[in-house]
Image: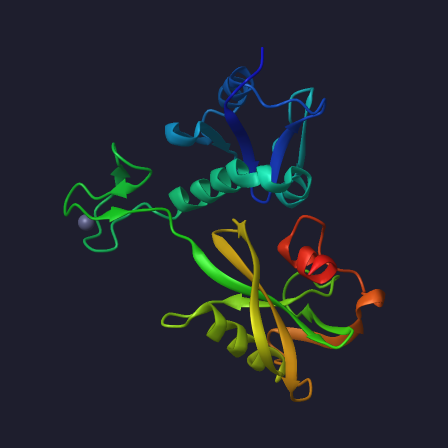
Length: 249
Ligand SMILES: [Zn+2]
């Protein structure tokens, strides 16, 4: 029988899929909860989302396999909302246990997808961290960077968190200047993507080179270069906003 629930079983950056490609059913979820009764689990009725969060990458029953959440995003396209939300809520619940105002243990709100404090009434909604990601162009060339800490095998767009008080455009200018010493102009919004690792909302922009020579911020950037659009090095996976900026913008 077709299953209308959006069922997900996560562990870290991986998610369980059925090897035949069909959706994870309610019965499957029960199997996982029976096998691993100490796993976290929750349901968000409003979006018909059901989640099991395993503590370690268990050996799965026949018919199931692990894959990366990132590769599923690529396969799902715009249908990734439910998985992005499920992953975001799992991370948020893990990190939202005590009231930041009075320190009491939080309980689930009966009205919203939120946690609430039984002592002081504080309500905490799922949090999103805004980030900017931008592709800088100079004629037919684009500026790509290899990060010093993560994904060191690919060249990607520059990116960073928006700081308190900033507009998105100010964050674009600041991040590019900090990481590469380049001044840009004509900053234009391109598209956005939820990136729940753990809770980013990525705002994609394009920008044009105005002035400056590449000067790396070594704690953040291992290398940055201008590449001809037709001769890009290894770039992030298809389905990511970085990929779309590099190959489609
Ligand atoms: Zn409180």
